[in-house]
Length: 362
Image (cartoon, rainbow, N blue to C red; front, side, top):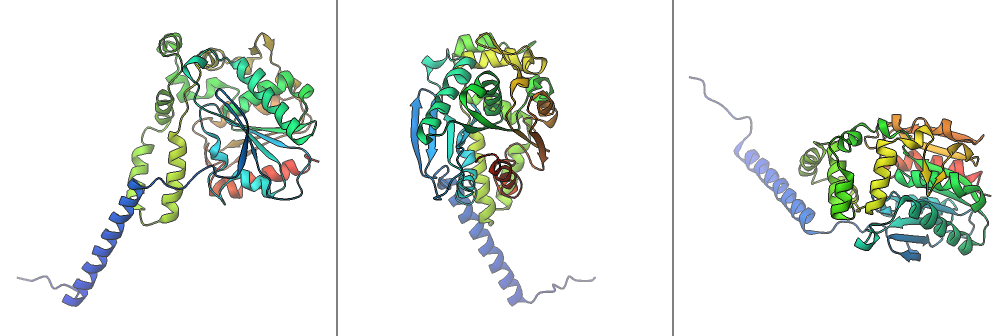
C-alpha cells in the first residue's frame, strides 16, 4: 500500500505552523482592536458654529489659504444624514479639498429634531432654515451672492428654495448631487412606502417624529445582503489597515441616521413619494407654486452610475426641468456615497466640482 510522503521536512512544517500561528494571532489582535476602539475621528476640520437653532446647524470652516474666490459656497446636507460625509478625515475630506482649492466653505447640517419639533414642515426647511443660512453666509462674508451645493434630499431642498427665492436671495450657482425629481422611479422606496400598506398618518400621529431606526431599516432594505457581505469582508481583511479604516468611517456614517420631523415626513411622503408633484409640476411650498424652470443660474447636476438610493432614472429628468442656459449633468462611476466621499470621489467628483465652480465664483 502506498503511503503519503509529505513534501515538507519537520523543520519546514514547524516554520509553517509558526507562520500561521502568528497570522492568526495578528488577526485576533486586529479584531480585538476593531471592536474595542472608536475608530478615526470624523468631521474634525476646524469650524465655527454660526447658527444652532433647533435641528439646524450652520458651520463656517476656517480658511486654509490666504486667497479665496469671491463667491462663498454653502453645502446643504440631506435631512436624514450627518454632514460629516463631506469632511471624513484629512486627505479624504471634500471640505478640505475645496478649501485648498480656494473656496470659502459653509455647511448647513442637521441635528435630530426634538419631540416638540414634530410640527416642522417642508416650509420650515425651505423658507426658514435655508434662507437663514444664506443670509448669515452673506453677512459673514460681506458678499451679495453665493453658491449652493445640495446632496440627495439636500439637493431637493436647494431646488425648492432656488425656485422660490434664489434670484432675489443672491443665488449665483446651484449644484446638486444625486438629487431625485421622479420619485416614482425610486423603486425600493416606492415598495417600502406603498400607500396600500404604509399608513404615514398613523406613524406620525402615534410617534411624532419618524424614528431614525425606522429609516435605517428602510435604507438597509435597499441592499438586504450588504451588511452580511460587509461583515465577511471585514473578517477577511482585518490585516488591511487602510481597508478597515475606510470601512469603519463609512459604516459609522451610514448607520448614523437622523429621525425626521413628523409633519415634514408626512408632507414629503404624500407630496413626493406618492404624488410625484415635483415631476408633474404641481409641487408647492406654503401655498407657493414651485417652477424649476425659473432657475436660470448656472446649474450642475452630478449623478452616480450605480446609485442604489437615488437611481439615475429618478434624477434623469432634472436637467431638462431647469431653465438655465448654462447647465450640465455628469454621470460618474460610483454609488450614492462613493460619489461624494472616498477614493472614487477624490479622483472624479472633487476635481470636476472645483473646476466647474472655479470659473463661476469670481
